[in-house]
Length: 158
Image (cartoon, rainbow, N blue to C red; front, top):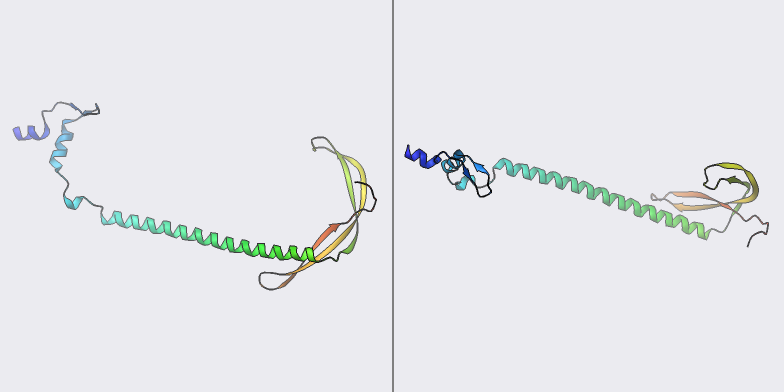
């Protein structure tokens, strides 16, 4: 009986340093378990395998994200190169073909721009067309048309 009392205590509630009440059985359980052996000190093989699988999944996700970003950057550089070629052709091509006149109407609106009123005036503007040829990313010849509004020739304005 004395051995059991020594192991589980006297049966009275004890307070820990933090002020919480500990059962007399909690200390007995700690004493009966004894110190951890060296074999119980590490992780199990299952825990290590789960960590390895999670790590490999994260590596796969990161590899996919990096691959996606690399492809997007490559496509963006192709688009920038093609746009630069188109604008270079637009600057160098001075021939503007006439494409008739366009009527541009101006309507009255309210101060907040919500309500549109009647047409106030209308201007006839010559419309020009500028064709630009360029090579696409696959080496095929492409053409793009730009429509330009010409001056009205009325002489009004600054």
